[in-house]
Image (tube, rainbow, N blue to C red; front, side, top):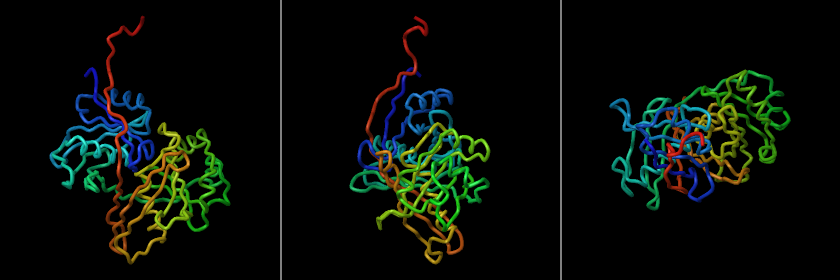
Length: 309
């Protein structure tokens, strides 16, 4: 392939230049993994998603996600961006105001993605894998030092915990602490090396807004993402974090929550989270959001000039 068509889509928002931008390549079957990585590096966004044919009959299509430095198993905002683009282009029979459901093959297993419509605009909802939380294994003083906060700023109600996928959730008492923290990327990378923590989700329920359940900041320098604007794959498990630590009513079988992120780097976005339980355990976690296309173009993969001139 000499060139590809590529879009840049802002996810978890309807306003251009906010939310989390993702690169989207719809026709990626002929691309090698090496080419995908180069394209993601060139886009230099937190993730670029590639839409491909599925490798098994149970799924409708396949998604692969790449940061500028490596492939990842799951990416929430790029999934939103991918299906927004598919709906915008009318792929897979998608039509305005005609809801559809898809089975998507990924490195995290098959995911169910629903395309709904609001005011003629695609609204994407999909399920995340349900994962376990474990106590943070290290010294909290070292963790706080890497994040540029003091231990007294940590929540006294619940301690930092690590999700199976390597995300570490760190709850803070106040919005001000979340706003002013100053992470040291080199130290965060050392924690990745020691404990395989791939991302740090720093959160607070001190929102001052009845419509927002938490504010989040997410740092993943080991993946080439110093600060991610809006992280669907972390906001979804945040609902499970609250449930498992008894902050949500266990008698209620459906919780509808909203996370806010990106406000401190001028890219605000919002993730809707739906948590279904049976009163004893979590049955399903879904995240949902809007998106908007901000760029549509072609990327040249091969030049007509010699490499040395």
